Image 1 (cartoon, rainbow, N blue to C red):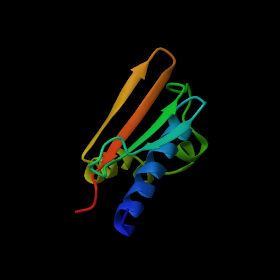
Image 2: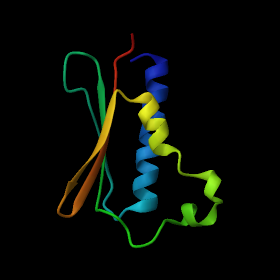
Image 3: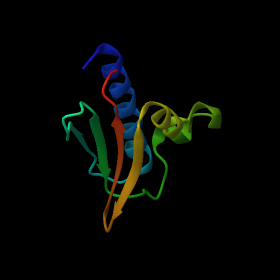
Image 4: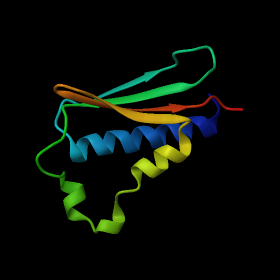
Length: 99
């Protein structure tokens, strides 16, 4: 992967993991895959579902200091979404291969 794609992947991973830590129950698991031959990277972060309370960072900062993660992911990813199961939620994003 080229440096720009690596930087984008790190940003998407950071956003997804931070959201899981701040808004969801454990356990949190990160999975990175390159499922096809097209060079795309699939990033998945699974968690234990929504938490009853917001995380420490979210509650300690001003409203304008958070809340842009999904917009950032949407800008960088060719696709993204959420898969909900009984006691787990997986948020995912696909980064296209570098041109």
